[in-house]
Structure formats: structure tokens, C-alpha cells
Image (cartoon, rainbow, N blue to C red):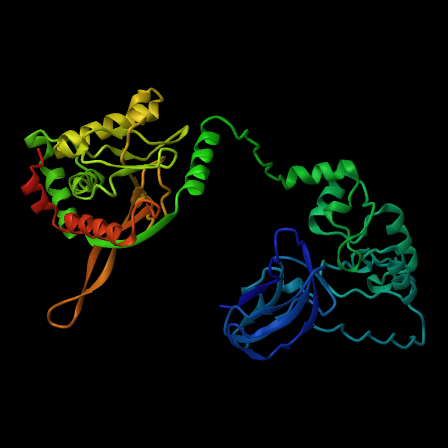
Length: 457
């Protein structure tokens, strides 16, 4: 079936393009991606490529034409195929070159009886129309489209009188489709012509017309909100953290096969054994809390004013919660002494209080280590910012399938959980931080064994 090629839309503000030059002619064979013609806007030049393989059946616009965007300019199909199959307006499309003007017939020997004058030929939009030289010059002078004027001369020929009448009425002013629509609705004419070839655009209309055009092309206005309250508090604390800590991030990943399998077991049997809804995040947080007491240099706080580093044996877990009011970080004190079910219930309770806005302020202080989980958003790696005077924060990322080697020399896809540890190099060095991250990854990979050793409930 024949395919129409359209004048492409070059940005949101371009209403029409100037067809500069055709690179093909009817009958040429073309391939998809081959350049058909060159076009221009008032800012740049472009090439139009073929959107199909086949033969150029017809060119629907001539070089030098100003063509509205998304208008058919060519038809491509199989040799001998009907143009009308692709473009309903093909029968009315302008020819590739103006037909030579027919010579006037020789006068008859005897004049026929006078007949009523025939009306001027009706010329459809897009057809070639004869214009007298004087009419063409007059049209150029007044910036009107001679081809859009009704011709009163022989065979619809446009005369200078036709052009003058069109200028007086404003009916043939060169204008974009949008500008024409507004002009017809209001009966007004443009006050300027800033488009290509002297065409009037919507912005060239009068004030009232511009308002009408604006109702057809609404522009969303930006929302300005005050930078204060909790948003400013969060911003100030983040900036302060970056200014006061020598922050460095290490990234690794852990095999999540066992983690996913255990989560499935808990989900399928939670009601039977009276467990809460254990999540992947619950399991990760529990493993981290069991690991922290063995790495007190990461489970620590830094007080530069006092010149001290406090290394803790108890894990007071802080975890980031997204709320309608912004980021809130509640703390679960003594999280390392809690079983999995108790830790899960406590975190759920704290998170709900944060979202409702009635969290006890005492539950927002005293954290020794923070976890921020963005895995549900598909984040594969990020740089978390240290919370308060703590010396480290763990970013939990998405689980992704990655290829892993097998014993027989092949490979298989394994689910891997991304982990991003940011630490303060003022208080802890890279090797201890890496050992901690390595221990957390191993604890996650062997989560069922870890639960058996430490006791989940």
C-alpha cells in the first residue's frame, strides 16, 4: 500500500517549514532513510528522509513552498500504484510542475451566438493557479498568497483587481494554520509577519487575537513554593553533612538467591505461624544489625568539637522513611538485640508514625548507623549522605539479574543485591569499611544460616 511522507515537526514552536530542494523526482526508487528533500525553519536546515521502500509516485509540494508541519509532501509505493490509496487529498494535490498554458483557439469563421458568461473555474486548495505578472508583483508587495485568491479572469486566472480586493478584505494574508483559525474566528488581520517568507504566525496577531491563540495553546505555569520548614531543615542538614564529613562511597553486591527464597517462605507461611509481613528490607536490616556490633568503628559517631569518636556495641538503627512532608529518619534502639519479627514490627510502627506526622521526637535521635533503601525504585547504585554525626550509612539498591560463571565453564543469571556504603574518612579508613561491607554481603548471601546462628525470633 502507498505511504505518505509528511513534513516533520521540528520543535514545538515551528508551524511550517520551507521546502528548499527536492533530491528525488517521480519514478525514482528510494529506500527507507534515503534523503528526499531539504527543508528550512527560521532557525535551522534539515533533511527529510524516506519512511518506506518503494518508488516515488508523486510529489505533493514544490520547491519554495511553505508547508505546514505534519502535512503530506510525497507519496511512496509500488510502481503503478494509485496515489489515492495513500492520501485522500492526492487527487487535489498540486502537480510536480505547472502545466503549460494552452494556446487560445483560432477564431471561428462565423461567431456563434452569444452565450451567458461561464463562471470562473473552481480551483481546489493545492492546485496550480495562473496568476498574472502584475497580480503576482502586487501580491508580493502586500505579502498575500496569490494562490489562495479567487481568480475572476479566464480559467480562474488571478488578476491585479483580485489581489487588491483580497488585500482590502484581509482574506488572503499569508498565515500559519493556527493564525488563520484565529483570524477567521475574530475577523481580524495580523499586525506583523515573522514567519518564513513573510507568513504571519500566531504571535503576530493583535492582543485580543493572541489571547485567543493562547486559549488554544495553553502553557503550564511553574509552581513556586517557599523554601522553608521541613524542606529547608532537610536541605540544611544535608549540606552540613557534606561540609563536615570526608565522605567516600564503596559499592558492591550480594547474591540474593537465598534472600528471595527465604522471603517467599515467610510470605507463604506468615499467617500459619503468626509472623508479620516480613519484607526483603526487614531481612537486610536484621543482618546489618547483627553485623554492626563486630565493627564498632562503623557503628560510631564523631564529635569534632569534643575531639572524640564514640564506638558503640549496641546498634541503634536509623532508617530513612519517605513521607508527604519529606525525609524522616526514625531510630530503633537496641536493634541488634531484637528478633526478626520484633524488628519488623517496630520499623513498621515507626514508619507509620512518621507518615502520620505524630512520631515521638525521642524516636528521631540517638542513631548510630543508618540504612537508606531505594531498591523499590530500581536504583542500582547511589551515594547516600551520612546522617548527622554518624560515621557511615548503607544504601540498599535494587536486585538485578547478572551473569555468573558455572562450574562447567558456562554462565547463568543470578539475582544480585546492590549495596552502597558511604563512610566518613575522618573517622574510619577504607579497609575497615570494606571489611564491614564484605561481612554484610556475606550475611545476606547466607541469611538462612545467619538466622539459625543468631535466632530470628
